[in-house]
Image (cartoon, rainbow, N blue to C red; front, side):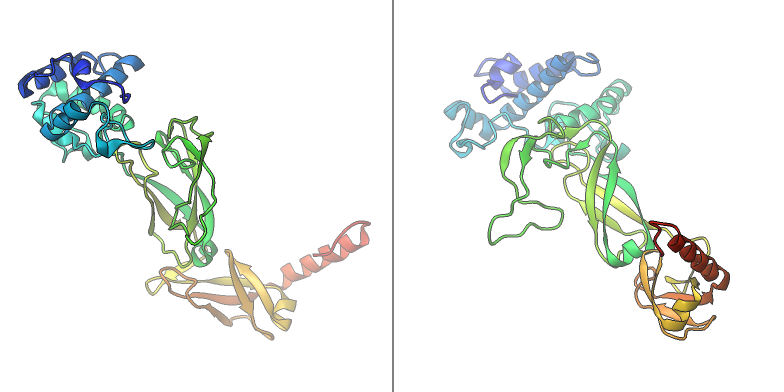
Length: 344
C-alpha cells in the first residue's frame, strides 16, 4: 500500500469505528478481493494486500493512535528511506489473522495456514504463495543440491547454483534497486554480503526484487567442505517478510573406482606415466594435486592429508601406466612432426 493511503478509507470505516467494526469490515472485504476468487486479477491481489495492511495498523491501539495523531508519517517514520505507516514490515500476521476470527494452524503443511474449514483451507493454502510474495508471510527456506568434485571440496571453489523461482533476486538482495560492489574504506562485507550503493533499478529483476523464473546464484564453497554439508545464504530463498534463506546441500562426486573406508578415507588407484614415476612431479586426481616422489614403483601408496571426506585422507595406490605412457609419447612425437603441432 502506498504511503498516502488512509487505512480508514481503505477499510471503509469511520475514524471512530470500534475494533469489532474494523474487524468485520476487513473480513468481509478480504474475502471479496481474495486472489483465488479473482484469478489473474492483479488489482484484486493488490486490494487484498492493502486491506490486510490497513487492518494490521488499525487493530493495534498504539499504532492506530499514532496514525490518528500524526497522519501518514509518525515522527519515528520521518526520513527519505523510512517505511510508510502501512508497511507490513514487522507485522505478526499470525496474530492478525487470528484476531480476524480465522483460526490458523501454522504448524502444519510447512507453514501453509489451515483453518479447520475445508473451504478456508483450500483458499489459504492456494494463496500462500501470493501472501509470501506480497510480504504477508515469511518466505520459504529453499534447499538446492550442489555437486562438487573432491578437489573442489578440498580446496574450495566458486560455484553457481540453479534456483527455481519465485525467489529473492540475488543481484539486488530483494530490494529492487541496483547496487555496486564497492566496499567503504575500513570495512569488509561478511560472508555472502556485499557493501552496496544505490544507483537505480535492478536490471535482473526489473525493480521487483523477485525472480519469477529459474535464476542463478553464485556461491563460494569453503575449503575442506564435507559431503552432506550445507551452506546457508541468508535472505535469498523464497520471497516474503522476512525473505527465506537459500541452502545449498553439498554432494561430493567420486569416481566409480574409488572406495570410502574408515569413516571418510578415500582410496583409489592412481595411473602414473613411467617418466613421472621415475623423475617425480605432480599429477591430478579429481582436482586434487598429487605429488609423486622420484623413483616411485607400482603398488606404492601416496597419501594426501585431509583430501578425503570429512577431513580424512586421500590414499592412492600407484599403478604405472606403461602402455598409456608410450601412447602419449608417440602422440607427442607425431605432433612435433606436423607444422604448427605442439607436444604435450
